[in-house]
Amino acid sequence: MISEKNIKQLVEEVINDDIYIVDINISLSNEINVYIDSNSGVKIADCITVSRNIDNNLDRDTEDFELYVSSPGLHLPFKVPEQYVKYLNKDVEVILKTGIKIIGKLTNYENESIILEETKKERIEGHKKKQTVITNHKLKLSDIKSTKVIVSFK
Image (tube, rainbow, N blue to C red; front, side, top):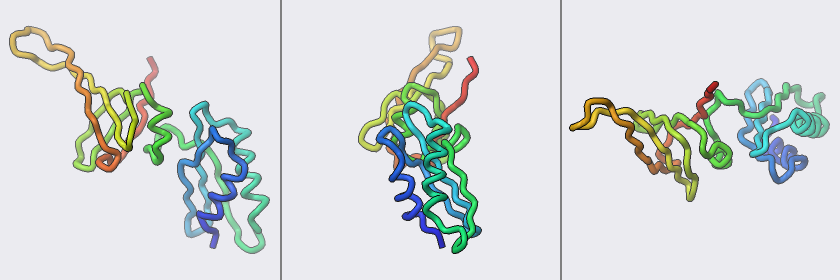
C-alpha cells in the first residue's frame, strides 16, 4: 500500500519554500491526489515536477496507481493555515461548526484565528433607509467547519 508519508516526502523533495502542500489523498484503489499551493500561484511546471518525482520513485510493477497533482482549486475548502494568509483581504464564506454561515472579507490571520469583516444592510431605528453595518468577527480555526473563497466577477 502506498503511504501518505512516502508521498509527502517525495513532494517535499522537489518543492521550493514558496510552495506548500495543501492535501494528499490516497484512495483504496491507489488513486493519488496531491494538492499544492503557493502565495504567488502554482504553475503547471510545479505540478509536473512534483508528478515526475512521485512517478519516478514509485514502482508501478509493485503497485499500480493513478496520480493527479494540481492546485486545490476554488471549490475546495481551506485545509491549511497558509491558505488563510494567501486569501487575506478576499471575500470568503465561513461555516462554523454550529452551522452559522458568515460571508465577509478575511482581514487577518494570527495565532490560529481569523478576523472576518461582515458588511450588511440593516434597518436601524431612527433611519428610513437601511444602513450599512460592518461587524468584525474574531473566529478560532477550531470553531470553523469550512472556509471557501468567494469568486467575484466584478
